[in-house]
Image (cartoon, rainbow, N blue to C red; front, side, top):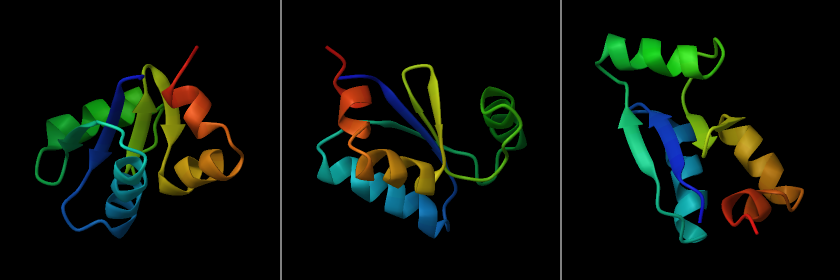
Amino acid sequence: MAEVTIYTSAFCGFCHRAKHLLETKGVAFTEIDVTADATLRRLMTERAGGRHSVPQIFIGEIHIGGCNDLYELDSAGQLDKLLNPA
């Protein structure tokens, strides 16, 4: 299974929703909480090509985007392919 990283903040409903989808699929992920850490938030923004909202989700080195992007991939049947490359 591909390595998943999700940048979050403590009181973000979209973050909780994205983590829930990953958890229901049995996906282990690394969570990086940027709530009170300006350095981590800056690193997230750089890695995400300027996007500064949370969550920012990566599968391997592929930037997925935010919660809605994750759900759109799942609805299109593409998320499982990214999570379990052949």
